[in-house]
Amino acid sequence: MILISSALLVAYLTFYIFVVYPKKQYITKMTSKMTSMVLGMTSSILIGLILGILLQGNFAKSTILAIIISFVFTLFIARPFGHMVFTEALCSSLMGGMMGAMLGEMLPSQDLNLMLFFIDTIYIVSMAYTLMLIKKEESEQIKMPPKKSSPSFSFILSIIIPLFIVGIFNFIDQGQQPIQHDEMDHDHMQH
Image (cartoon, helix red, strand yellow):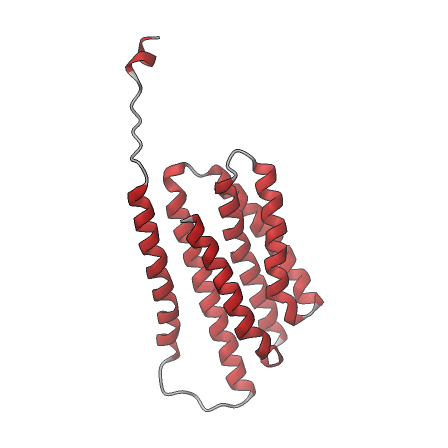
């Protein structure tokens, strides 16, 4: 599940770069701020959670790595929008990286996949909604006639398909984990 979540982060960031960078002139300052803060926060929480899980028991290293990697992701997210937006996004990613690492450190092992799936869901919904807003602003700026198909259908579809894929991998990963029992060994009970 960690591998799927990591691939999800990289794939969406790459898609974001190819979609948003060419359209940056159509995006208002308010939308660029909101986009950078939302995506900076959600991606850094996911990055922190992944590193907190991978480096469980080493909170300092997971936090530092989460912050550094989140800064790199935020650089790509906020780059087209200027220094002010970049600074706000960095602050969001700093906070998200720390919170994600803390969450990954505190979770019991049986809840790791559930939390990864939940944070993946938040990330997918945030990215889909942000890209929908950017597309809407672009069409308003260049005064494109509205499409007859429902924008909510494409929005829902862009959420359901990735969640279905992540959910399948989560289900497979859950099935492969050994069942843990809280049974004590009889030898230890005699002491």
